[in-house]
Length: 126
Image (cartoon, rainbow, N blue to C red; front, side, top):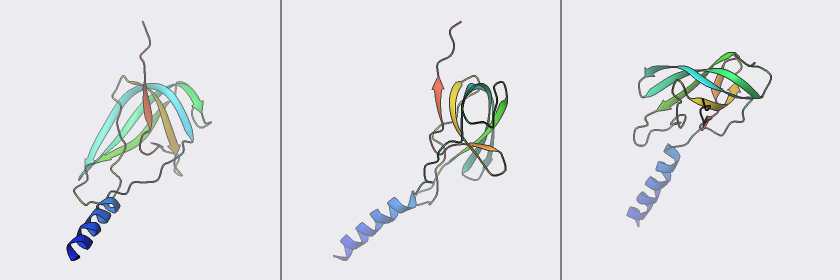
C-alpha cells in the first residue's frame, strides 16, 4: 500500500513540476520579416531578441508599418523535476516572414505571447 501511495505521489509531483505560464492574449499582431535574432545565455535559459520589420499591422495601435520592433522571447532546458516555464515553442530565423502575436509590457517593450507566438508565412513569389 505504501508503495502505491509513493508512486501516485511521484506522478502527481511530476505533473506539478512542469507547470507552465498561463496563456496570454496579444495586444498587437504584426506581419513582417525577421531582420535579425540576438541570443544570450544565462544558465539553462537562452534569451532572444527578435527584430521584425513590420509590413502589416494586423491588430493594435502601438506599432506602424516599416517600423522595426524588438520582440523578447526565451527557451529553457528544464532539468528533471525542475519547476518553471520551458519557454517559447520556437524562434524564427533571420529572413523568415512571420505573423507575430505580441504583448506590450508595462515598460513599453514587447514579448511574444507565451508560448506559441508566431506563425511562419510563405515567402513572396518573385
